[in-house]
Image (cartoon, rainbow, N blue to C red):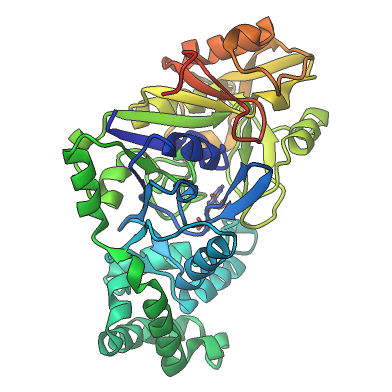
Length: 429
Ligand code: IMP
């Protein structure tokens, strides 16, 4: 499978970092194709914890090229800090390549993100306030500043001036903010340019070379399908497209370059930020999932909302992405729950039933989940490494998911460490 896309099948935080880290071992190139430092992943390697926001998890593999594609929005301060942090811990970063066409998050994007949320008041989206939305908006308005602009001070200054003027009006209370000083901003970004220059590359070309030579390219999605700007729970979504189709645009390859699409889903559901969540819980099970699953955001430190696994949404995600496989993470978190529930239908406001994920926002906002009950298990499964050794109830739970979603489960996560996984076919991919 030379071209494999990994996407989050829920609302993000499904454990994509660990899966990418595992699959990166066999990949020649790992490329991120959307999002920015709103994402965050924690990888545990030999007891050592790495928290990354922009750099693909593959960076821990010396022979894997890690690319940040044109579809990603990059805060140059954050990526410089990540590179420095990895170097300090002895990780070789020479294989990190950053697309010259990727857009840059500027200080005014961060200010606008926060100001926008404040203005929305109770209608706020609950963004990560990293400037993601305003940066993608500038990209679409053709006022964006790209990585390649860092290498030419004159162009950079002109572009910042043109992009910043309209922002001044919008950010009037911040007019005197030193973050908005043209001279200081240009100097700061030129400095980032010098630091990042060795990494700046034509990342699309790099993917083509690998694919044309039959080598493996792993396209790493961030966030999740239900946060997709077009197909998610708009407006409570991110400003990019986390669906598999976006891998083509955000990395610069064609649809025929994609051979497989794996969706990563937790064995239950979580969401951060506002928006509909039909299978959300607010009881002792919610507390169990939050505590045992350590459901706190890597990027913002916010407690995640928790609920039962939503199979209506998962089946939607499978179809939308043309998934060929599922990875079910955090199955161990369900140990100890006597009875499990999975959402198999939604009930609308006036009692209407929905078997499919509703396209209409009003329906979705008022939908509550209807459940199927499945038996739980009490055993600790953290040391299990084969399907046969799982408790029968855990196997039945996985079979039910696979059957309902119409796609095989390929890999199962049973704990945070790298080796705490079960390959469904008994062998690695
Ligand atoms: P933004 O991406 O910062 O604009 O935030 C928009 C919405 O996406 C908010 O509900 C965020 O909580 C959510 N979001 C963004 N990135 C992630 C992520 O990596 N995991 C989970 N939720 C995310």
